[in-house]
Image (cartoon, rainbow, N blue to C red; front, side):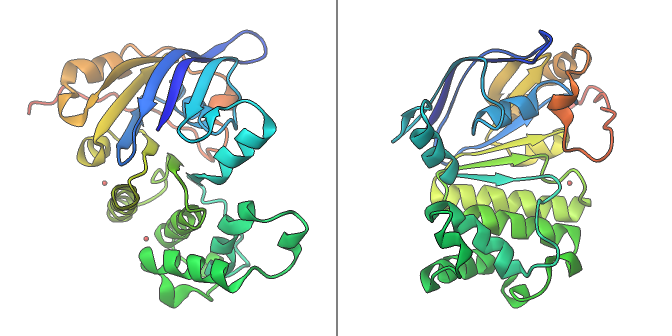
Length: 271
């Protein structure tokens, strides 16, 4: 469980990227953060592991307590797997070597200069097998497809043996088939391990297909928080047509191309 109380972020210059936010995420939930580009999704996601420290409010993690102090924060980050849009892999290294980096949080800096243990290798190989890439274990990552590279990123996150999974636009650069495979994998791992997965997306239909719960964000505020089936055309209109002007560059950094949000039309009724 992870709980946010009154969490907010104000960037230098006075721009409020995230307004006072109260949320609670439970084990086994697949939660999608949905909203237009610049709405505050990435800021919220990065607050959860203090990559973007909150300006105010508190974050409490089950088994750790309030995220205050270096030791608590290090423990939380070790237990938080992060999946990135651009994968953040070392292309010239093998799949196994990349996944093993997920074990570094369990060792001192000095110990990390030597080969990791057989136990660490066993954990890494089990994670690689789980994402269906065992036969690619010794292959350089830069020879893999985009979808396969994202699966390596998922395996690396799994190797941390996390209690929380965060994914920032994990399928933004993937084709529809690969997108479905990646999100299915994240959802299944989340259910198997009984850990929450919090995923930011732009694609409404993917959110509806995979999410147990959708948290809609517009202008730095949570404007929708409910099961996916209750995301109506009216709520979509509120999320996109009434979205505020984009937040500062810090909100969208890491994206290699600008995103122009497509305003969804009302609906009657995507390695």
